[in-house]
Length: 346
Image (cartoon, rainbow, N blue to C red; front, side, top):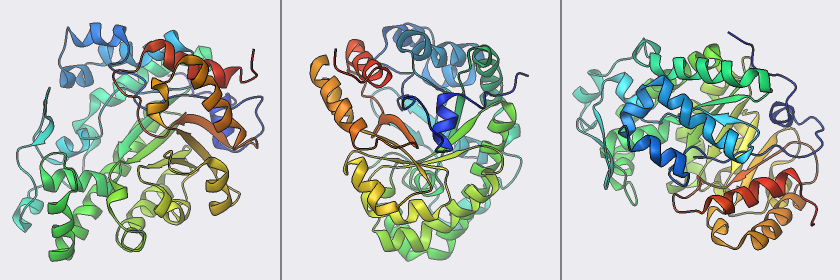
């Protein structure tokens, strides 16, 4: 298996080394905004796409070939970990993911698997091996990923997405011991899954804390941060670790304390303010508001240059503050990518 590139723009930026320009990629860059992706999805449902390495590779490579991004994020889903521990996950077109056996009682927790997670997800690692083999000669790294324990716990308890995750927060306060056990189980599962992705060829891994913003900063630091620190401590010697928190402003202290190599932040604070708060020593990723891509391409270029000027020093990876939206025109995504690659006004 080819070794992941070590001197590419993306990995240098992860290490806060000087680069001629920031590398750029987009969360959810393999997705519905691309007609080529929609053509593949017409042949296979979402889970089939995730579980079929040839198809997962095809859609993972699309934004690399079509847009010229500097890194490929493997096509998968954070909820595969819940499947691996023994929950049944369904993906429904109009309503999103649904877990048919949510964790509601202590016996639900004791029925979940606590080890052997990678054996349940061989298709993810095969997809990474194939994409890594395809991109390594081009010097483009592959990013693996997983959900953060709290975000996965929110799905595991609610059984679906939610506006405020009331049941999860109720569970956290009413049954703190069981909640902590669930977080510990998920932290171990996420660690195993990410280590297996690195072994398969992922040059870096990202932890997605999609729902961290529903918690206050003190609650997050007390209940959630220790699990993240445990995960990062086991991964950092193997590959750069990116921590993304949606709703990041109140959690910047916890994000830095996690030990992650790169902090991926949403759009709610400009990058120079984020840097002022967290100080030096860690790279930043982000943070264009995804809805800015609805603007005309010339305005997208202007907004992107403003984002870049907010963090001119090394240690910046250009990205969106959340995943690209499915109805963004491709030429608008291209305007963002092209501006990062050549930020000077024409």
